[in-house]
Length: 409
Image (cartoon, rainbow, N blue to C red; front, top):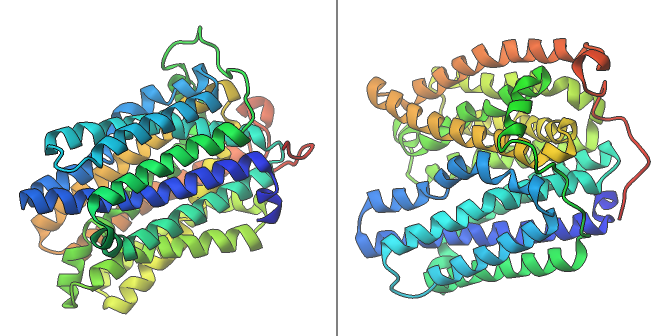
């Protein structure tokens, strides 16, 4: 990763995102502890956690397009400062739960254009496609590692320092992000055309066959996430200690980190592009193994392998951002991210409903794997087909991995 981190602008974006993600993990745990402690209501605690996802559905398609209509650096700085102010207010002791929820919605709404601008700016920074792909490997490894750390120790840290201090720390991370981006990321002119319709990027994405196939491969995560939503009933069905719930939750992101590392270091970019369909099929196919009602060790192995092969999503995301025109890249990212959030939410909700009806969490996860195969196999065939199309027909370069002049710093 040395060549990637040698690029100053990316290094600034990476540092800004990494410490912000760490703060967000603390904030999520702090909010759940705070709300449950004050209300004693599992419903309120779950509702507050859901609010960390739902605004992305509303803001992903619309607000992400701001990354194409305003200077991306200025947008990232503005959103970070806004999030710092909102989280700072959340840290005020004895804040009413209803106001906390409204502030949380505001924080998440501001995240949509900020992430879109960050993704689009990163693609602008790198002119070498192979280096850009590796930068996304580093982002995926970093983010999932921080989530694992937050999952393992976030609760203990919040209990130790208190919820208000944990939220205040998250506010500080947004301030640091704003300062780092302002200082070390270069200003660039507006990339998009303000005369384009508001959902022009959305229409463009769905008009391109290759982009539609990439979306299908990305949204398969909605089925892979089903075991996370059923971690508690899975542990109960296996007859193991409730402590195993944390292991079941950690297995997938841990596998993802390992898979991303192995792909980045041992598989060339062109091979990775060809393999995304195969890896996607294997990732969902591994869930079928839950129909065998595995013991805890075998279940953890299945989930870890599903996470490792699921690292194909980094390659898919890099290809998606590369093939999207720079002027539509923010809006196109919003389409992919919103769809992924919807798929995750529906996957968890439907998984819970099916488990309730069938009385078996393991059979539900296995069924999710069967449905995933029914989607992944034709999507893989479509992916192989579209790669054989000549650039003149598909409208895209023959491969995402052709290196160009180098990197800009």
